Image 1 (cartoon, rainbow, N blue to C red):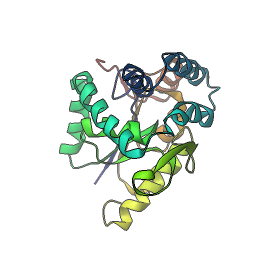
Image 2 (image 1 turned 180 degrees about the vertical axis):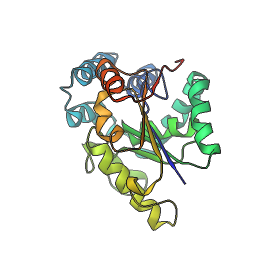
Image 3 (image 1 turned 120 degrees about the vertical axis):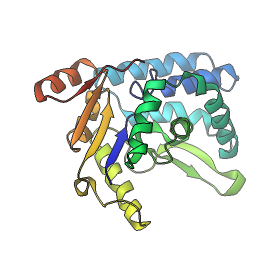
Length: 229
């Protein structure tokens, strides 16, 4: 068995899932129109490499703390239906080719889990390694706090989070334990922020990469996929 990992924003999809979620909630009247501008400022910090992901997560998630998780899950289902027509056929085909080859496949993203999971379902990826929000309470009273549980699935922490996920897979009797246990492992990403995980797999692939990742890919001879996004 081999391993195939996929970044989400600007890799599998040609847009930012967090912005799409923000716009979705603005349209429903859940968030004010200014929420899009706030989110965009964090996107600029991400591109500049100055992002504090904890601050971004808190700003985006805390306004939802007044709603029960059951409501947020329902919105996630609606979000999935709305985004279905926007999924690129080329990326759907890429994921399917790895699945048909029998590879263990997972979505690996800095995006918060409750936003990432609907996208994972659209790509047929039941395994989602994402940033985990802190949720408190029980039953229908479960709510978000705005904080991140453990390490965010971001930069060097993506490697740690993938290793933790793989350890859980072996506990369930599925798949080798650890990245190095696979004969071949792929990671598809557009961003230089993902260099730690790209360097940890046997087959890194730059997908319509940003300037820094393109430079690294050219220097090291990594494949560059100019996705028809």
